[in-house]
Length: 309
Image 1 (cartoon, rainbow, N blue to C red):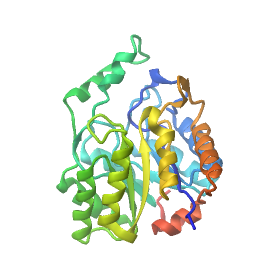
Image 2: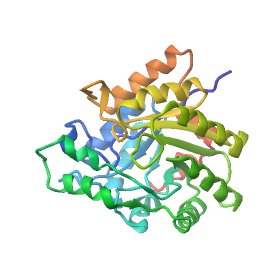
Image 3: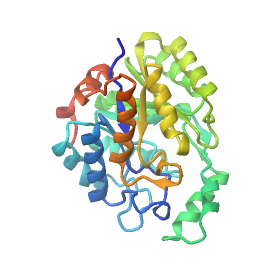
Image 4: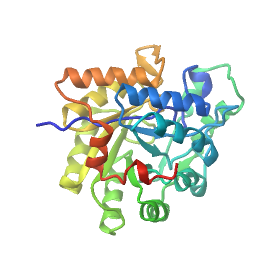
C-alpha cells in the first residue's frame, strides 16, 4: 500500500525577486501568513528563507527568522525546515546563522558545488522595483554555489550532530547522490535520509523525465530502504514533476521559491494555491497526503518541542 505523500512547501526562497510577482512573500508577516496557509492546505513541511522586509533581498539575519518561526509554530503543527542555502553569494557562516540559532527539526543542505545560473531571468524585465535585482541575477553568470566536502562536514557536525537537526539533502545532479553516499559512509549522518531531487536549475540536472527516473534508480541502489525521496522542479515543470514523483511512490515540493505560477502564464495567488492544486492531483491519483506527525515519524525528526523557538 502506498505511503501518504509528504508535501513540502517553500514559500519564498532566495531566487525570485520582488519585480517578478506581487505575491512573493517578503516581510516576516507575509512569510508567516504564506507558511500557515500552505500548512492549512496540506503541506506538512515548510522550507523557509528570510528576506530584507524593505527591499525583498535574501537576508541571513536570524532575527528575521525569529520574527516568523514562532508564529508559524503557534498556528500549525507543520515541520519547519530552515534553509542553509541562504542566498546566492552568502558565506558558509552566513548561511548557517539562522539554523544554528533556531535549532530546527529540519534544515536544507545542498550536497555539491555547482554553477547556479539564474541570470536568464534578468532578460524578461526592463523595469525593476529595486536596483539590487538585476545585479543579483546577473552576478550568477560568474558564480559557483559553493558546497565543498569541508563545507558539508562543517554543517553536518555543527547543525546535525550539534543540534539533532535532520537534513533535506538537496541533490541537483547525479554526482550529488554520490556525495551524500560518501557522507553517510563517514558515519556523520544517520538514516532515514530525506533526499530532495532538484530539476530544471541551469547548472544542474535538466527537467527531463529520464533524469528523474535515473536519479531515482541510483538513489535506490545507494540508499536502499534507508531513505525517503522527494522531487522539486523549477518553473513550468513544478506540477508535472511533482505528479510523477507521487505516482512513483515518492514525495514532492511546491512553493513560490520554485515556481511563481499556478498554470501557463498565470501567476499563483499564493503558496496555498499551489499546495491545494498538487494535493488535489495527489488525491485524484488515489493517494493520501501525509500529516506533519506522519512526516516526523518517517523522517525520524526530534519533534517540535525540541527546537529553539
